[in-house]
Image 1 (cartoon, rainbow, N blue to C red):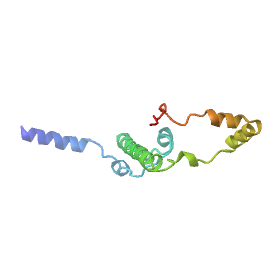
Image 2 (cartoon, helix red, strand yellow):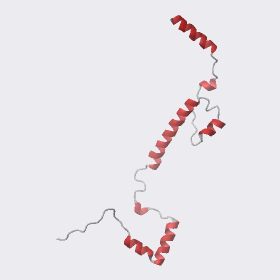
Image 3 (cartoon, one colour):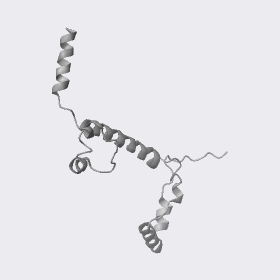
Image 4 (spheres, one colour):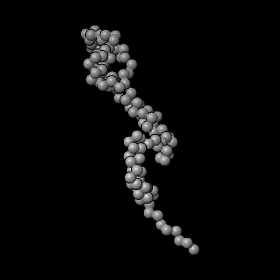
Length: 124
């Protein structure tokens, strides 16, 4: 039985065509920020092994997503002092117009600066 299996494998190895070296050596270069359909259209050599390309593309995309979130968007202690934000030109213009008409003082007077209702402290 083992001899028959060995003969079948040997015949199969001789009959099957060899793959080109460019196909057997997968390209390890990644191309971030380029749409996949463009890569398949304009770089056919890079996408010959489609399964490996999709695996690498998913790994690179996941890593870049985590890096973007943790290194850029989740910077600790960044913009945590809300009283020191830069005011935009539109904000400054509207604020100046409101100060000219007196609306700004009224808005500051009625502005709520606390989340929970304040309880009156009992004086003894």
